[in-house]
Length: 180
Image (tube, rainbow, N blue to C red; front, side, top):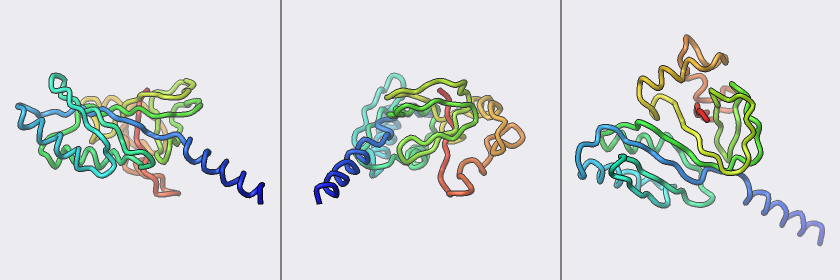
């Protein structure tokens, strides 16, 4: 019985220490006034897994923290901004990556999410790491074109990050393209 209880306690600690995304920063484009900024703020605050949103009006940036033990859905955040009538110009994520060695064109799991690091060159990630999502809904068209040419992996076709890489065909898991 003691062994069983010890195993349960260890499992709980292992699950609670599982790496995850803790916050994100989103820069919106197309904002022209304080009413625009307020519309984006209201849209982001309605997303269920968002805990807090702080606005930096000068830089048109929304700094978000997420509710504990909930998985952030970056696509839902981009959709909220788009539904408010604007677009995402830049999207950065801060996550506890644990201890991971990045290799170019490798899919890395951080928490419940998968990332394809386009410019990785063997960097060692330890602990809290900030990186930028560069999928089409998370960056400007110019940057998307530049970043999509960085990968030679099968999921990238004709110099563009193809939809076949947005989901892992074997698991159906969403994969976000990122740069470090």
